[in-house]
Length: 340
Length: 153
Image (tube, rainbow over all chains, first blue to last red):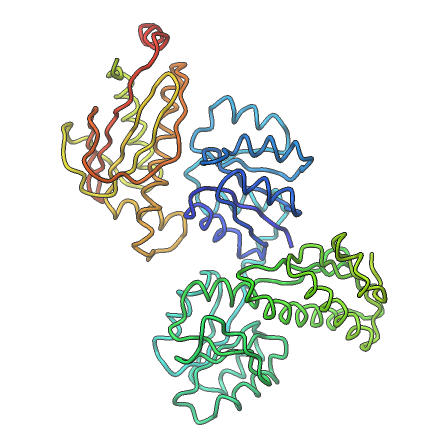
């Protein structure tokens, strides 16, 4: 999926750009000044950079000069409240640079991103969905507050209705409370897993912790109650709700790792499930090339993931090839794996 | 040398039109004078032909209106009012400073920061909006003789 770097010293502006384009499924990175932007732009591939002009430490024009100097040709949209300065007009002449005047609306951001990244607005009509089986009437609103606004929550108080919803929508994430339900937590987790094999399945309970990844049988872990926005975005959204794979010219590409290091096991499991689901959906006799270049995670964990996915896909009758970053591709542990 | 009244008037009229465009409020210029800051004060520093700070004081509700519009969130966290105020100051200063550039005045401004304590001395402009009153204090000084020539023209 396209990767967008949002550079602004104002977290409000970064978050507003993110909220506007996140529903397209793009992968978004943040930088709070020009220096961080130069480092991030040189280190990995980006498809679009929104770049503020006036910032501390290094301003946007200096950052743009260094980014272009490093040979990075990613399209850049300068975001500025002053569009008439000589610096901005000169920067636009560099090519691959446009500007967006502040204040901008979410729709202006979407139109700009759609044009440059060739995004399809119709995807906004089918947002990611969460299945919520709850007993506390306040839980749906609390969950909605913890997740990005474009996520749809299908909430119900009965397991039977939950299974019907799961069949209709194929949720990527299911969360349940079981305090006053006739079924036990283990039973609910088992039946949800049967219906949603690749979803993240979590119980919501006051005993949960900020490190909720504790896979046990069909259950992926226990979330703390009340759920906060940090966990909602950095754990639930980053690992289970944003698209982790998409197909581009017969290549199954993957989204990079986001969030704190403690999320890595959850991310790798979710990624593995998503890749398997995508490959099962496709004709296994076709070439399956899996691009993991953008996976920024612990190299040893990625090597283990590639070995495991390769073995599973071969068992299923496919012959996958993997595209990795230069360092990982040299790993002796992957000598048996077909690399691009 | 303090700022010419003609520039201050144009600066102020851009602020009025930009407040309307940015947060959708109609604005009246009510009075000029020195008052205590009633809301969130944000300061930015100009450098170049014009030097010194410009200070904005926004009511919390106005700052939150920008957050609502940027985030498309009808019920934003009140803690975001400070972020809204600093960004509003940034946008309004940027757009209004184009008046200086129109006159050929070379100036740049830095990043906004929250100001605490008494407002600095300067030309005070008070604007009345449906979300409360906005104050700005223009404490910038004209630093070169070049600008005097430009203004005289």
